[in-house]
Image 1 (cartoon, rainbow, N blue to C red):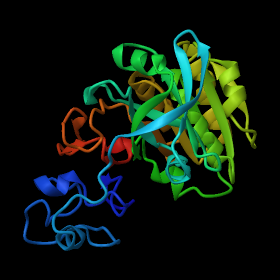
Image 2: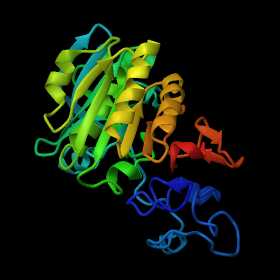
Image 3: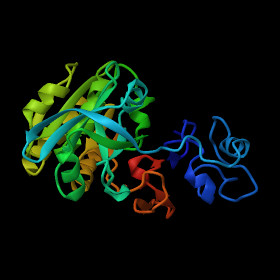
Image 4: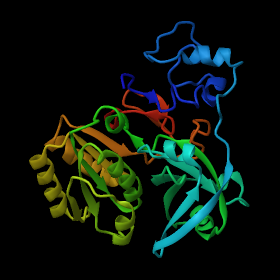
Length: 315
C-alpha cells in the first residue's frame, strides 16, 4: 500500500462511507474540502462515486439477525458460537483481519461488541467466533440461545494486513505469535496463509485450549511452539527462533504490552522483515464516527484506527 495511512474500505462495496458525508474521508482531498486532488489512490475515484451516487453512503452496514447453529464452551470463560450468515457473508469473512459487531437481539445498539472471525465455512455459510467472557456485552452474547444481531463485515482487525493478503502470496516463511483471545484471528490467518506458504506459530501457554486448536486449526507446513511470553527466557528463545528462521513476515496477535515487547525483538533480530499486528484500539462504531479509536501517528496526524490500515511503525 503506497499511502502510509490507507483506508481499509477504499474501493470496496462500502465506499464512499459516512466519513464522506462529514468531510473526513481518510484518502480523498476533495471530500476533505480542498480544491485540489492529491490522493495516490489508483482505483475508481472516490469523489466521483460520491457525487454520482447523490452524495449518499454506499451500501451502509446494517444489523441483521442470524441464527446460532452451535455453541461450545472450551474454558469457563471461553465460548465459540457458530452463526448462519450465508455464503456471501462467509466469503468476505474468510479474509484475515475480518471482524463483526455482535449483540443480543433484545439489547440496545451500544451492546454491540467487535469480535474477530475465527473460521469461515463458505459452503455452509457459517462463521465461528470465539468469545472471551469478561463483562456485560460478552456475557449477553454467551447467554444467547437462538439468534443474535450481526453487523459487518469489517476488515481492519490486523494492522499491516497488506503484507498478508497481497505482498506475500506464495512460498514465504511466516511466523504468527498469539496470546489469549488473539488465538482466534491467528487461526483464521494461519489457515489462510497455509494454502501457499510455510507458517510457524508461537502460542502462549496461559489459558489456552488444545481442543479449540484441534477443532479449528488446519494442518499445513510449519511448526507449532508453545512458550510463556511472560518469561524472559522464553522471549529470548523467541529471538533465537527469529534469528534462525529469517521469516519474511511476522504477525503479532497479542495485547499492547507484548506487541511492544516482542515487536522490539523482531526489529532487533529481523529489521527488514514485514510486520503485522493486532488492532487493539478501542473500536466502538467501526465507521470512524465516534472517535473512540483515534490516535496520533508519528507525524502528529490524528487518524481513525477502525478505518485506517497503516504499517505498525507509522503509529
